Amino acid sequence: MKKKDYNRALTDCIKSINLSRKYPDNYAFLMPEILLAQGKDKEAEPYFRRALYLEPYNYNIMLNTANYYWYTEKNVNKAYEYFNIAEIVKPNDAEIKYSKALIHIINFEKFKG
Image 1 (tube, rainbow, N blue to C red):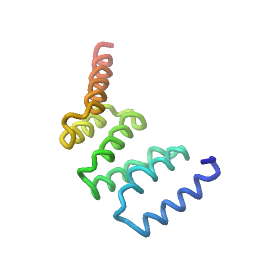
Image 2: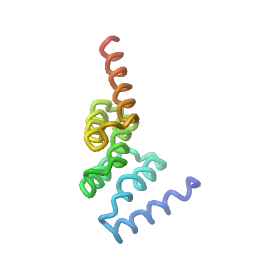
Image 3: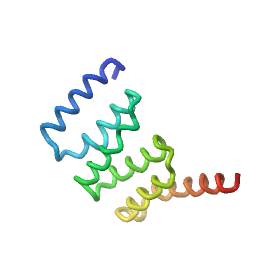
Image 4: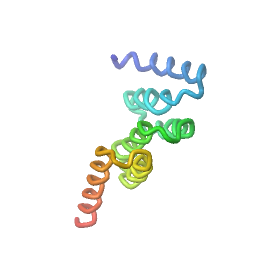
């Protein structure tokens, strides 16, 4: 998608939200992606909260939320919280274990340094 198309994508996403306020993918995936592309990624947080409200046991939304906090907000502790929640849903998921281990390394390096 070209940069000039993001305004149109935003308009369409808002229309989709208005047509189906209970469709969590608008909140957890589409809107954050559009906001990120527009440099407004810090505005995505309430959309993740809404998505989790609609589908509190959706593993993919939990992971996307965790990654938002980790990579966008640079808040590894908040990301870790969401990885812990996702781990309750999928306790044997290798991706979650891997991400949590990386956060432990990051926190250790901060403490050590």
